[in-house]
Length: 465
Ligand code: ADP
Image 1 (tube, protein in one colour):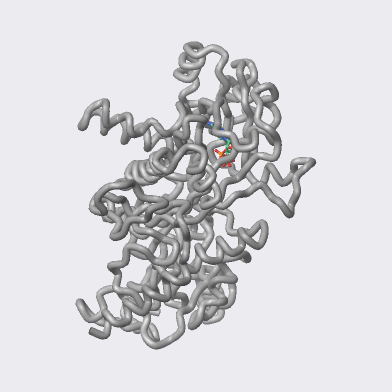
Image 2 (spheres, rainbow, N blue to C red; image 1 turned 180 degrees about the vertical axis):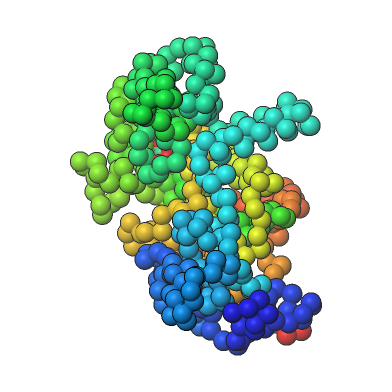
């Protein structure tokens, strides 16, 4: 299909008549490379139609070329061919196809090309350190303090010598080693003595000419948070969902619901080798001998917020959750100039945040493919609503006005600057004038269905008038 060919049903209106590149009177065609909740959501969405076959666009182009008897297969320069409007693809597919892909105005695809700038542990820290330094230079040291939300971290092997200096300055503290590009707790260990990482270092000093030289995997070594906030004696971290629909200008939505993931075993610093105590990943915890699959190890973010408010007061909790907003915005700003912005791309990040015993939130990591597989009924309902609302925000159906600050459970946190809330929410917003209340409602009541009903009715009447 050539660049100028009209996609059936796609309204290629000009300028103000169709500024957002919407789909007209036909069904919306989607592809999905996952077999979990997202596929259920897409299949259940009225007017959406699955394009058969997965991850096979490139293959089809080659097969067609062969069938048509080309002597040699021409290089592929057009991958999309307009056969889908929405593609929930995996990162590998995007990496292989993005550079040769042509997309029509209206097409939407998951992931930005170089999402790893934020989601690889070493790159995330590198980008944060850079923006922190720049902020200190331009706005002073005090402003730089707003970046004190990620633990001291070094990349290994490249920063090994700086790490050793830091290690010697802080005798007795615990460090955590994490492979930069792995997930689900794999390859992670804690240590107190330098000697514990010598095995890992072995490959580094073998001569380059040695054919058996093992190239050491890139790790980050990070100060371990030794005083996590405990509930019932157990450590937890919080999964926060963040949707970026544009990096330039930066436009960010924050989902109200999420969950806290608890470790199954009581916290103690006596047994630093016990991953069931120290790693809160579900993938790790579900293998614990006394793990109860019915009970799981999760609390909703609403449950967590209520618990903390009852214990420490509403204001202390607001302050702690405001710290999470700061983490989200600063981390995204740290890659804003690096991410290849593309109006077709969006990203749903899963942030992992850990509270310490002073209720200070720490950024642990950011995932570009947060798990969408449900661990139980409640988890399924959360993810189903989350993803449905994500599609509501993207609004391929063009039912909204584009000016909304809340869509279902997503609240607009940032659009080239902070967004302020229209209405106060006693439970979640600070006292004071509404003008100063940020549009941030993490862990607040999520009455998404009612809100959507009202929103669509209001949008319809605005559009009519
Ligand atoms: P992965 O990508 O393998 O999940 P994470 O960086 O998320 O790696 O770490 C896994 C878990 O280890 C986290 O969920 C958290 O419970 C724990 N953890 C990681 N880094 C730290 C840290 N600096 N201090 C305390 N706990 C940590």
